Image 1: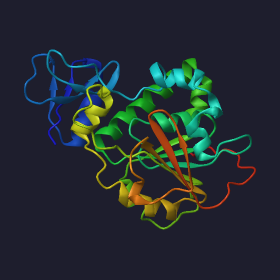
Image 2: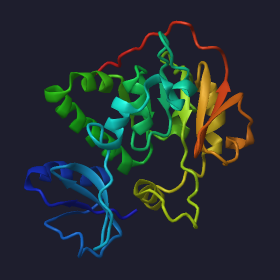
Image 3: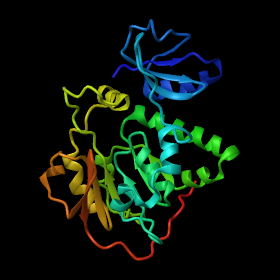
Length: 275
């Protein structure tokens, strides 16, 4: 993969250099992205953070991990709390805060929702590029929270990122910190005729690719989870690995397939990860 790191901010040069070295990509500065012709996408580092940016004159805006504003922050404050389908799917209720292993973290949005509702969430992400987006999103959110939002700092303390392929991680022996729930939201292959694909999904398909091995995750996930595996799918998509779930929660465009292993305890207080 060729994904140059672009830094047009002198204050962020050291961060950009570290990321370029980590990803083994070239570093450029003082570049006009509208005139850039070497690659369709770049990793942009500036005062707003680290972002995936399409190049060209009519390119959409940057895609970055953002926990302090926009849709994620709005959902945290006005998204319906424990009444949301994802909360019901993982079994969250009064006194029950399951430890969720989000094995397909992506931009961390579902993980953040669950953490904001009290669940400890371990995020797995295999793409080195998306890992950098997540790490920077966490860093910026913590910096903001220390000054402006103690509640956000509490939410972030319930999230930890493991930079590893979920296919490898799920094959490990079950640890003492066995998750109560394993959550899978694999990227579905992009439909050629879909005109209104969100820019985040287009970037992920172009840079990361679809999760072609998603079927292979279900078996290991069922071995790792203590109580259930939750799979988020497009509403009309086939079951993961062709396996019928115990039950489903269905919305307008997506659904949650729940594979029950055992009942969640009546009391399951939230834990906080060691920093």
